[in-house]
Image (cartoon, rainbow, N blue to C red; front, side, top):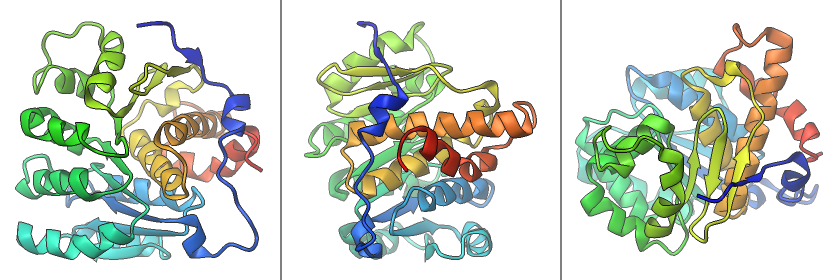
Length: 293
């Protein structure tokens, strides 16, 4: 793999979606987030909160009853849809939501053993305009790669995949952890073959698209190395896409701004003590540093 270009604040400053005082909530897009499960409701909270802080006009979360109850308390401006029932009934309920959504996120905190997760992933790959695939949905994609990767390749708008190193190993090795010692070297090959954008999360995150263009984000801190940080990133990226950004641009901007917010949180709270939910609260500071104000 050729050495990626360094992702900088100066570059990200050029990517900010337009924002006008004449706009209204419909101007800034609608995000649909399929996230959370009874034992991982925090993932739904984190992705929803970051999406709301992205500037997106409306954010709807599709989740289980327990997660929705938590979202109702913490994020009162989010729209809520219950994700329970038969596969056919849930997909039927999703149909109008997907049609009205500017971007769909699937994956944070989902149960990978639940057949509904796989069914929704397939439905979103085929029907969502802009799409972010994260966390549990990537695991399902890895285990069902023979049937789902051809659908991914046929999309008119490339999906954004956001695996960490372990998830990418499974994805590139078709469901196993074996056979890939240096996964970074496989990223360009994977996105070229599957016509997608990838954010490979590591201490130096790689963002790649199918024409071979890549960036490396070299800022951040060890405080981001906690479960839940990726859920914040996925929600932020989804909100940027919903506002009209192109997939690769949204991925680059979200990675940089997420890391800047993490650095700001670490400076105030300490890298050891900071939590993923703190990243959301430091997004205003990160926007300023990235030149988005």
